[in-house]
Amino acid sequence: MDIDLNLSLQVPCHVKSAQPEPQFLFLFHEPKYEDFFHHFLSKNVPCILSCGVTDKWDACKNWVDARGEPDLQDICKYFGDIEVPVANCSEKYFDSQPKTQQTLDEYATYMRQPNRQGCLYLKDWHLQREQRLRRPEDPPFYRTPRLVASDWLNEFWEARPEKADDYRFVYVGVAGTWTPFHADVYRSYSWSANVCGAKRWILLPPGEEEKLRSLSGLPFDVASVLNAESAESVVSSEQVRTGVRNSDGEGEGGEKVVPLQPRTSADGVRYFDVRQEAGEVMFVPSGWHHQVWNLRDTISINHNWFNASNVHLVCDHLMASLADVRAELADIADGSDEFLSQCQTLLRATHGMDLAEMAELLCFTINRRLAALAGGEPVMGLDGYRYGRGHLVYDVKICASRELRRLLAREEFGRLEELKRWRTEAERLLEELEVLDLTVDGTTGN
Picture 1 (spheres, rainbow, N blue to C red):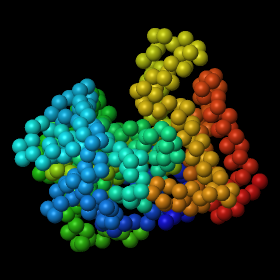
Picture 2 (tube, rainbow, N blue to C red):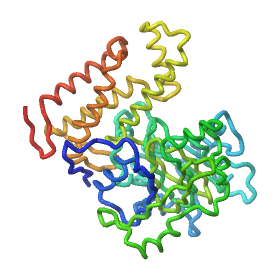
Picture 3 (tube, rainbow, N blue to C red):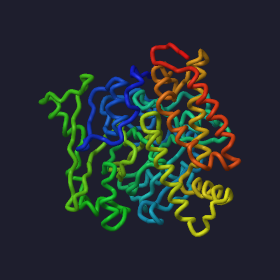
Picture 4 (cartoon, rainbow, N blue to C red):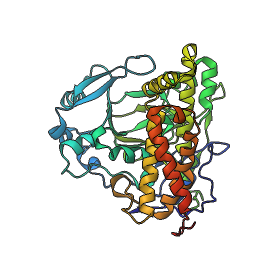
């Protein structure tokens, strides 16, 4: 199945922020890919997909018992001896929760206890990677929803199997487990699908977290600051379905949409407070700080990801993180190559990515797409989705190449040996782009 965009190259690649008055939407009918890309991804608008996009997943059949509760028996059969990361939600460790390692069998035993001790949350488990390594012949336990299948981050990591990494996770939590207030890694998008159970989400539009920061710093538990400890007023899809049936709330593609307006705290902080049910998929845009609770025993599948519509925000955050590193090392700053290299080492340690890896990812993204546009193998996204020509052109002509030029303008690419390789590769690709002069309709010119 293709994912494609029928967009003119004159269309802006991104919108810097969401609507002036931010909205949250429930979607009860799956929109067209292009409509979702333009109205939600490019505009950085959050939503819950309540339209059956997980109905055919094996996980939703094999990991859930007849009562709709988590059943880990099927997973434990093959992965019970695997060590998994488990967070203790009753404790605080700096701005996170302390983690230990348990076997999956041990955590499953804990879940089955009628009187559980502690509040333990299995999170950030790379089960998809484990399955690929241990049981590659098994069918996948889920398929990435088509609307979120343009994923440069995981596409990049899947092409580097020797690195054994990705940003595809399984979470298993008992009722009451939670994740503290945060924004996602790299300022990526995230999507989270409930295989079973229910979650509560508090989400703040970008910039609202600065109001909290000016009060007393970013909180560990945002609900207490917003005076929103109770979950009684949380909005769910079931609560708003009647409103949809009795209104003309249709989107541009004919899909039913339910826009919610933000609540406002006593300190003037705007936020959304919503409930995600089993089978629903939450889309969290770039830079939306959020906090999440499991209201019931819950299993979810989550991705962090970015693509043409938010790569500029990812690069913005990378540059801001590098500026923070340089400020942190100001006392030893001497302008030398050694200092610039030290900054890259610290950037990778604190941010998770440095300039070299971002340049490599952008070069990889452009290279694959140029090869396909020149008649080579098609570019396959996650889980078998194939990029159409319009999407490939949009990705490389406007988005990836622009951010690559932005990286090359930095002094590090002219001075550090570890970056010169990527400067040479980037310049070659940008020259190739100029020669091809790609258009969306399938022609090339000089």
